[in-house]
Length: 130
Image (cartoon, rainbow, N blue to C red; front, side, top):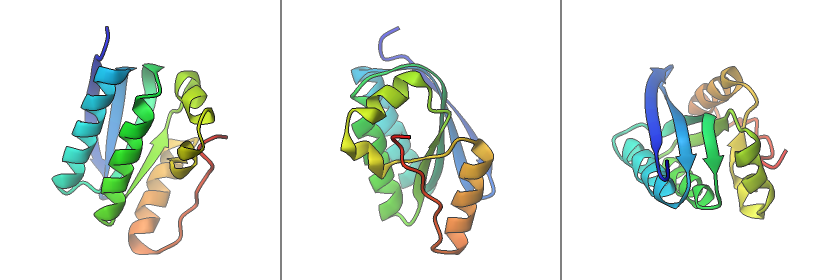
């Protein structure tokens, strides 16, 4: 199942929830980066990425998420992660770059923070390596 990643989308409160399923390896990471960057380019700069159905996540996924976050921030938005399982957490623990990503434990927390950030500069960040 190399590079097989599926996306589903839901808009809620001005946010785009992107739910991923499958594997994020080198081919999957390219698809992930391109898809998220395209969503930002299309006007969805406030992203919440749900990784709870990702079955494998290797080091190639991290730069893809960071690139998407950079695009979102440059467009006045943000990118937050939820559903970080063991394979994702392992990669996040291996590098200091991962500290730039915001991880929420609950979808409701990610949505609330994303909606608040749209109206105020306050941001409740969690260390992605936790």
